[in-house]
Image 1 (cartoon, one colour):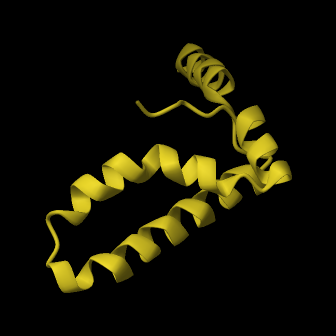
Image 2 (cartoon, rainbow, N blue to C red; image 1 turned 30 degrees about the vertical axis):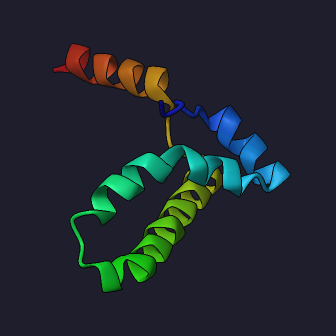
Length: 83
């Protein structure tokens, strides 16, 4: 079962350098998708996928301007009221 990470949880992952736990949460999905790739390419692809996950998590942590779910929903409602 994959956990849902809030931005607060992502901050603690970044602070604690707890990347292994985060990557382990994605491991079942990674393994499933690796079965679709030829055996000789799986190791390289697994490393690339994990690297992309880390890059995206870093992007989410550093992007302080990105709204959370409720902020985004409020912005959408305000936009709909104006039109």
